[in-house]
Image (cartoon, rainbow, N blue to C red; front, side, top):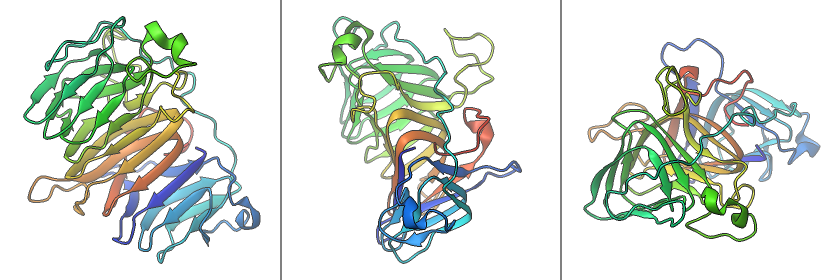
Length: 338
């Protein structure tokens, strides 16, 4: 990760990483490869009051409570609350991308758009959902991506969703995988992948995966023990993966391979979020109930492993992040964040 920023504003937002119930294995670490701020604070192994660093906490009353931080540069904060970190290791060693050699999903048969004509590899078309739409989507390749707005309610059936061009643009509504576990993978439309390297076309080329609508979000990554056809009939090679941007597609390192996640009313996430060439921006809901539903059933819980070029967390309430390695893609290396 090139940098990590956490800003809970003045309302006391932030993150709390802790072992999930029954988990005894160590984990929940944050690894940041940036050397920003390494001098003069690099050898202190403590977070300094300074506005700039590789691991940077801002906002007047932001809360950060994590087990360990391994950072090449400096850990800094600029608000009233010093971060609570069990172990701070500045000038830590570099950690390479642990998922770099995994073969990603590939585009295939078009998924069915229930609200209009489905896009194809030759003629991509965004599948749009708006006020009043209550739909169930099935796995497949969605050429041209998804557009979600208003009060649309979308339920994802279990399986793998390839977003080939167009990305996901969500400005409202809700997204739910309550009926099973899913992987959403963003890449280029293979028919236009070469052209996308030089000229960006919104429907044909990789775009951001934005699932930060104003409603609710409840998504769980794939299980490693359940088959995920057509890739496997026994177990799944993508077990634990939830949101994944293709690091070899045209949007990587170009500002079009970012992942935005959050729900205004309720946030409930499980799995690994991965973009080698983009930013992950995670914003919890306004609920302070954490991983226990409030009277309206809302949560503010993200049991996620994040591997990204850069990483940001915001929101007005503390986002609870229980660590459970059984929910993530298995890594031999330490780290919640690359």
